[in-house]
Image (cartoon, rainbow over all chains, first blue to last red):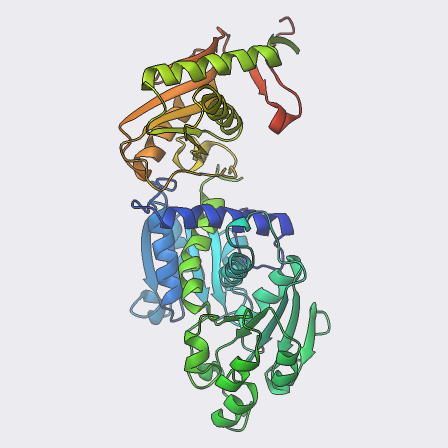
Length: 315
Length: 181
């Protein structure tokens, strides 16, 4: 693997291999010495043009636990605010000898441009681009599901037949898109639940079922229910009347939580709007994997960095 | 390319039985004994040694696991990305006598990586090395404590170890690049 830009072009065997390597990485996280010497001497640049705490910290922890040197770059307070182009920023990184670039950008396709333009020779990891994809989030979600479902026997397994319901702001969500492609590749059956205003215009080519009624979806007894954040920073139009109405119709409240089977996994990519798309009781219930997702994120990102950066260059 | 078989299945079994006895002799029994095979074939060989030990000293409890060294190799950036193997170690190896098991001892670089990996897991009292075949050509000051067969070889020859659990058949052969065995 040279770059990790999207889950759409990830083959099933590649995805399973990455998840298996993440299992090895998770094992290392349980040791006294949590560090591996694998990427010693390599430099990873976290290039964040958009705000993020958990993803950036997670990538930073992952790179450091593989002994890589990490340079953090955020657009605020950098030359980008003086109007520097992506190309010039990239070439600066190239001149500094970056082996890997983790990029988050508000423009869909920015990581693809960085990887294919020839500006840099580093491996590129997409850490979220616009409304396109966020592949490591989908991989850590799949990893979390696999661990909850199969426990210690997770290695080598996919998610065949697992019923996953994704609820909320599908339209603006790169997490949902990456999950749709990856889960389909791994054999899961995905249902999207959202108000019609928060669904993309054309989902006819997506490998999903559509549902507008959350209560009907819950009656379908899903194995996994994933609540997405209402992205108020992207809510520049009237997608739903009020937050209270959204919470009542499409939020996972206490009553809906009680109707879910006791072994249904409740997921949320974070950060959560408690009381809006998910109630505090649902977020903190034993069924919730919110904190596991964060811990697993480091293991999955270590696996991704290993696959991209450990081997021979030009591999 | 021609391959010459140097150890048959029965020879391998006899060598592993002898190694098992030697391990017990040097450790004076089975106390604190942890056998860690290096993936892939070292794991199989390690399990067989542990099974032998259980047969020789009934009632003993020897941990047989694996130690993957992929993340500790010094040639990672010179080869294609490898898929790591499994690491299965006891909860603590502090104070244990760890016997590393590998199929072929060659440059010694795998064992160097294994020692580093072990160092990150804990602090064994003693680390020993068992190899089914020692083919020479060491590049580091490392030697085996228990050897199945010393097999002097030329650098351009290949040593193939096949074990039934992994390959379906079982033998050790030496393959010459020049066409004569």
